Amino acid sequence: MPIANFDDKMFVKAGAVGFPEEELLEEVIYDGKKVKKKAQLTVIHHNSGVQYRLTIDEYNVGKNGLLVQTAHIPLSEEATDKLFQYLLSKDKFAEIAHTTFYTVVESTAPLDKQSIEQLANLLKRATTNKQLETIVPSEVVGNFSAVIHQIRYKKAIAELKKMLAEVHTEKEYEKWFMDNHWIFGTEYLRTEDAKIGWRTAGDIILTSTDGYQDIIELKLPTEDVLLYDASHKNWYPSAALSKAIAQALKYVQESEDVRTTIEVKEKLPFMKPRAKIVIGRSNDWDTDKFDCLRKLNAGFHCVQVMTYDHLLLAGQRMVDYYEVENTDEQTTT
Image (tube, rainbow, N blue to C red; front, side):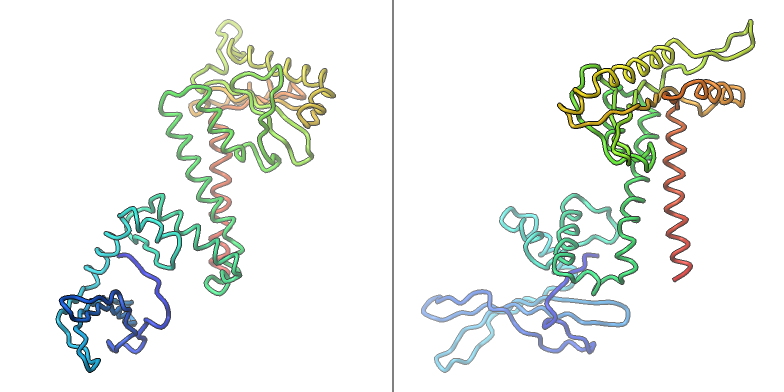
């Protein structure tokens, strides 16, 4: 059921109906008679919740100034809600949600774009006016950032899982990782949209907390990572992974060769960059394959190979961490 926030003078806190202030809607001359139309919103507070109803009345104004009621339209809570929703659905009233205190929130349906914008505007106003802590306890305000991150991370992990179950291009995965670079760890601050000669589709540049840049080379999750050599009974890098490693090493070397130019032109201080290659899946690997990848990574000092499932696990661990933190804090309070 929608919830409305109204001016305090309209509330009747005693539980009785009472007579809250009326609002003059219109005053016109009709057939030589002065006619007034008024609205009265009654809000009743109960222990079980809040009820409200709207009445619209029409009066003829006599010569002596006395009002003679000629029409009375009472609207139930449900009818009032329908009227309010009807007005909001019209173009001329669309801005009501952004310019007044009248805010509608559906308690059962998920928030649509307009409702989210309304909520964001209210929070922004409350923050600007330094009123947020009068509504929400300070310890909760302090946790807003963690809660927002938690929601965003969970949504992003769900999106990545869905993408991995479908068919997508490297460009589509690149967009996801650009929007969710947090999955590579808290050591990275942001992505960089630099125009560097060796950079191709699927390459992401991340700036770390020390101010320097690292390179992410994306390959599709459908690519093989390791292949089995039956004659030698061991695993070895696939052609796709071998090519990705060669590209990554080339990127690292070229960024070093033109480091000064990049720093002057793009304001990015590349210094001994590290390259991370994201390729293939490992959700069905056995211990031997994980051991092989571990040994392969140990052989490089500037390149790290990881699968999409490694990142999924890292992202899930981050989500779990926030959930544990929130649970601990709630238990403590």
